[in-house]
Length: 355
Ligand SMILES: [Ca+2]
Ligand SMILES: [Ca+2]
Image (cartoon, rainbow, N blue to C red; front, side, top):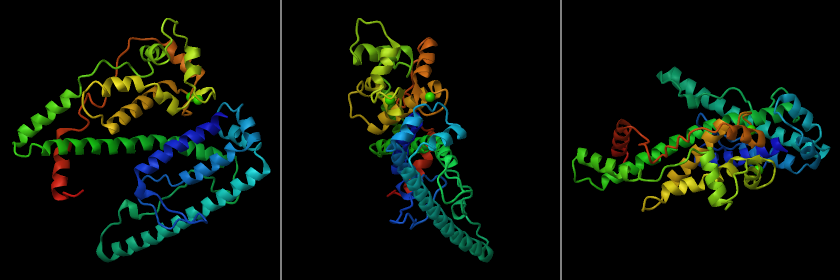
């Protein structure tokens, strides 16, 4: 069941990411045709297709049964597992793929039209087309050698593509977060607009410094951090830390794996130390960013087979490597932008004050 649940949990992540970039999503009619061409270098409009595929497979009991023994996500194993899906599921998957192929063709047609227009502008005026005006090449979430039916390569490509895009989602999120921090700094400084620029900057630095007064944060996923959760959240005080019981307790849905949300839940106590320490309003965006960074960090260290889940073997191996707790640097502890970036941001806002 691992692969299937992985697809579903990735869908949740993609869904969150799609909300970050509402302007880039193509809207679809009932036939699955795109009625606008999505702009931007990064597009996750195939998330609708991903969701539909994962829901279909989720509901197919014989597929789920076969997927239980799936240990790797190589192409052959995924293809073999798909063979267990019922004929009804297979034919619905074929239909989903045909809709997706139509949508992609439609998107490509519109992109070509746009590129042709950009080219004629270039010929007439010498203005080079921007990257956005050029049609995208390479579709890597479907097997385009077989446009009419959904096969093992389709499922494998969909999983691989989604895993790759996860890192792009993190990049996007970090960019959004930096803008949030710049905006906050800008708004804070404008409270002191009667002061000189140097004095405003000093006020800002003092303000940022205050947020750094919090207790030491345990290293996310480190033994100290997990033991604290064991004693204080799980209320196992007096009982020796038992990694197996701990793992089972925090595997909330009991599938034998810690998914990203189950791992994130382990950080609540550390996040409270940072965000409840300062007696002011909690900035939910910053708290969320710290949680995301902790999750990313733990998955980089622990998820050695890179399937987006922490299994028992991975969990045990990490705990075996007990070392000095090196703590954690919160987004509060370090200015998230350079002074130069803030200056550029302020200048931009002065030109476009209503942005
Ligand atoms: Ca789980
Ligand atoms: Ca793993």
